[in-house]
Image (cartoon, rainbow, N blue to C red):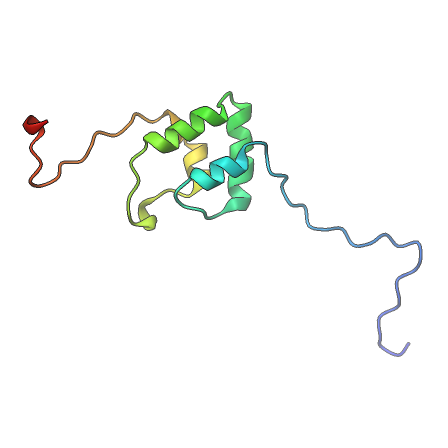
Length: 106
């Protein structure tokens, strides 16, 4: 024993890669549309769970399009949080009041 590791034997299987979640169908479109792209590893299983619960990619993308998003990413939920909360089912938000805007001028 000289302190060096023993060479792998011919019958030893190669090391397994870490269990990486498989990207669910439609996830790439969701990921591209969502305004905050963090926590992809948590978002993939949440997206798959949303699809299993009856949501469709079209509903989820419409929910993203109808939501009002902050300009500051600190105030945008992580994708997995939004998916687990079924964010696509939220009521569309009313437009914010802007100083100088007169709704009667429409």
